[in-house]
Image 1 (cartoon, rainbow, N blue to C red):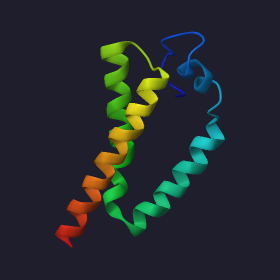
Image 2: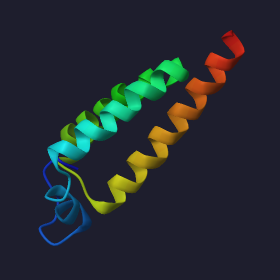
Image 3: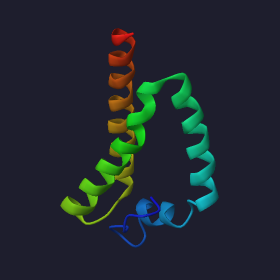
Length: 90
């Protein structure tokens, strides 16, 4: 939301673009690092988010509300899969 260009000026991508503050990212990042200690499978979260953001930027040129929703669902699916794999490996 913060780093991708909104696809439509009045769309959800534009609305979310200016709302995400750096301190929010740092706070949630700190929480995520703490959770990674408890569940190492979560380490893929930033990788998945960065990969999806890069793909959205390259293929579509930015972000929209629909892409936010798709990104959330794809990230959740990847995290669930990583947690299952980590659980089976333990």
